[in-house]
Amino acid sequence: MGKGGGCVPSKKKKPSSLTGDSTGLNNTTTTINPPIPIDDDLTTGTTTPAMITSRSVITRSIKIYVVYYSMYGHVESLAKRMKKGVDSVDGVEAKLYRVPETLSMEVVEAMKAPGGDGEIPEITAEELVEGDGFLFGFPTRYGCMAAQMKAFFDSTGKLWKEQSLAGKPAGFFVSTGTQGGGQETTAWTAITQLVHHGMLFVPIGYTFGAGMFKMDSIRGGSPYGAGVFAGDGSREATETELALAEHQGNYMAAIVKRLAQP
Image 1 (tube, rainbow, N blue to C red):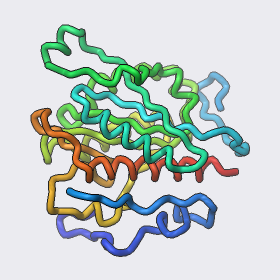
Image 2 (image 1 turned 45 degrees about the vertical axis):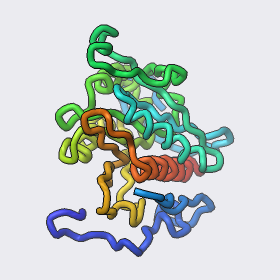
Image 3 (image 1 turned 60 degrees about the vertical axis):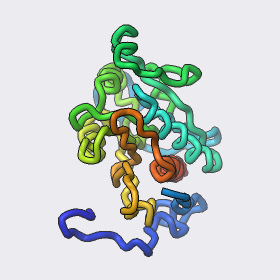
Image 4 (image 1 turned 180 degrees about the vertical axis):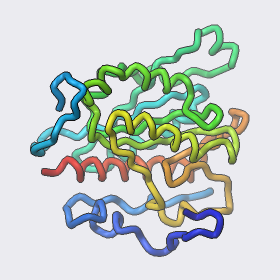
């Protein structure tokens, strides 16, 4: 919890997920790497939920889709570093995707948005079915996800009807303008999207270790997921914020890999 005098996890004690048991449930050969050092600063076409009766052996590479919306590049910087964390887990690969812009180019130019990496493709709702796990990133708008990401989730109605994403794990990472601007609430209010799809929300908790307790510099992120403070738009993500994003990618990859085991 860490607020209001509540119980605060030990800074020195590593969580069970980092001590050889990838999920804290039982022994497995899949392990989650320790926190990254910081330098600085089934469905049948009906609405009836599918019953999972067996688990097939995964022989292909496990795919985690890092899907994001970024107007000024802050979320995109986290997404790219997150991909590095995912790719560091053997047998798991990350794919970066942008969600479509809903504003006209005239409005985007008026807002002096620099535009994102054009080499990263836009994703359609139908493509989500191919992912084994997801990390969704977006800036806040009054404590909730940006309209562009909400519009994308609104386009997943067919997947919801067929429960095509049920049982798949997902996490969030965010960007806010100020320290009280929604680092937690932006992710918290987004959980409803996963609930209706029957997806599994995977927060990072305090698995980042001592990095979660640094007080000597401004840092975005929370137990819900990685985050960055954008300020007036000119502030760039610090190495601490990027390291947390990389850790979340690594952590999610290990969790998804563990869930894929027969």
